Length: 256
Image (cartoon, rainbow, N blue to C red):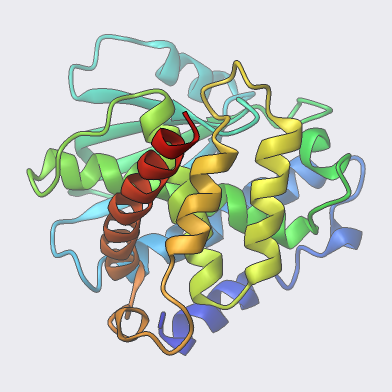
């Protein structure tokens, strides 16, 4: 299981970001701070299993300097990743960046804090708490980040941008919650995907998520005991994803 210290530090990061703190005027700013802290903690945990350096953060694209930087397409090192489920967050992966004076791979996310309805798509469903929204989006984007990093290192095949990459990111988010026995939150993600994401959207994959949910090792399974950090959780997500894909394929074949 993810080390208690890692989980505790993530929880501590969000204690100041309760429903009350997400005020009407500042909730996007508060969300960015919570998202930044949570995402960085996930990377710190990942580095306990992966020695190749990785950095990351979420930046406010309403700031002119940020918008200008990410508006450029002249940096050959950038690999454009995918967008979050509500298309409001974009993640850019750099395999050769410099952060704080150190050479590193980097996952930099952007979103516009001036968007008045940024979190409305999640809040209006009544499914999620503010903390769950933050954890879900951070885990989803970290799934993208880790997959891009591992592919750039040659440790796994590159996942095609689009439906396949979005499915992996959501599978990682499910794994993040399931490993901590947050079963109800994982179920909420599947319900949200089924009922609130258009079938024509490449983020729509509720049946595949349900197959992953069913294939995830139960509490007490030895596979869960091997997970000590988010790097290990990426490996487990890949393993369970392959198992669930086979089960889903067999099920759909029988139905047709």
